[in-house]
Length: 326
Image (cartoon, rainbow, N blue to C red; front, top):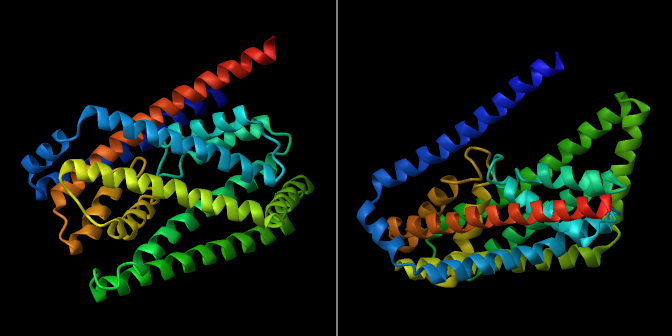
C-alpha cells in the first residue's frame, strides 16, 4: 500500500507545481496583453549582459550574508549548526523557492536539512520561525521609511491605503500568532506525552531566542540591509531599462510588492510580484511596460540565483557526505 501511495502523492505534488507555474504564466500573459510588448522588449534589450552578471553576483553575495544571519538566529535557539551545514540549509531553501509555493516555500527544504543535522530539531524550527519574522520586520521597516520620505510624492488616498495595508499586515500577524498559541494549547492538552515533550522543547527554543535581544536586533538590521540591497539592485536594473525613479519611491513600493508575493498563488510569487509592482508604481507616473521589464529581469536574477544556490547546496552535501564516510 505504501508503494502505491507514494507515486500518487508524487504525481499530485508535481501537478500542484505545474498549476502554480500555469498561474504565474497566466498573470504574466495578462500583463503582456495590456502593456505594450514592443516597449517591454526594447527595455529588456537595453540591459548589458555584463551588468546582469554583476547584479547576479551581488545578489548571491547578499545571500551569503543571509547565511550568516540565519545561522546566528537558529544557533541562538540552540541548533548548534556549523557554517557549512547552515549554508547547505539556506542555499537549499533558496533553490526550493523555484519549486515550492510562494517565496517562503523553500523553508521546507531548509528545515528538512537542518532537522537532519542538528542535535536539537526544535531549535532549528524555532530559529527558522524567528528568522522569517525578522525578514517580515525588515520589509515593514523599508515600507515605513519609504512612507516617511514620501509626504508630498504620494497621493493622500494612496498614503492612507498603504497605512491601512501595514496595519492589516500587523493585525494579521498578531492574529496568526494568537491563533497558533491557542492551537498549541489545545494540542498540548490532547496530545501524547511524546508530542508534549516536542512542543515543550519548541517553546524552550523560542524563549532562548527571546532572551538574546542583541541577536534579534542584529538579525533585524542585517535582514533590513539585505532587503535594501535587493531593492537597490532592482532599481539599477530599472535604470538600465530606462525607468528612473527616486529611491524613496522604491522604498515604498518594492517591499509591498514582495510581501504580496508571499501569497501561495503562483510559483515563487512570479507574476504576483510584477503585477503588484506595476500597480504600486503607477501613481508615480512609472510606465507599466518599463516596470514589468525591470521586474522580469529581476525574476531572471532570482531564478539563476536559485539554480546556482542549488548547485552550491549539492556541492556542500557531497562534501559533507565524503567527510562522514572518510
